[in-house]
Image 1 (tube, one colour):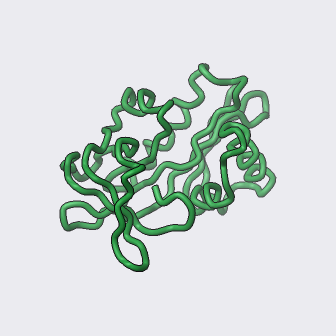
Image 2 (cartoon, helix red, strand yellow):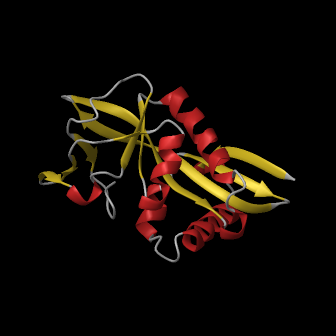
Length: 177
C-alpha cells in the first residue's frame, strides 16, 4: 500500500528525517552533502511510503529570487529523491505533485535546480527552463553562476517572468542554486 504525506520540518519525527536524509544520500550516490540536507529543512516535506517504508522524498522551502528589479517569494524545491529500486513507478511525480500544490498555494513562483538527467522530467510537468543568466547575491555582492545556467527551472504562479532575463538567488552555504 502506498501513502503520501506532507508535513513541515517541525512536524516530522526526527527518525523519519534521518530516513529521508539517508534516502537522499543513496539516491544521489553519496553526493548529497550536509549543506544539501540543510537546504531541505525548514519547509514542507513530501514523503512517499510503500508498506511503511520511505521510498520518496522532496521538500519546498522559501527563498528570495530577484528578477526584473523585484524580489520574489519563491517556493524552492530541494532534495527530490526516490529509492533506486522503486523508480519508474510514479513516486517522483507524486512527490512533485504535492510540492507543486504547496508552491501554488503559498508562493509567487516555484524554482529548482535540476540535474541533467531530470531536465525532461521537470519540463514535462510544466516547469519552464530559465534561459537567461543566473547569479547569486553574495555577502560581498552579486556573482555570476554560469555553471548553473541551463539547469534552473521556474513554475510561474503569480508572476510571469522573462525567461531570457537575469535571475539571482539569495546567498546560502554550499550549492547556491
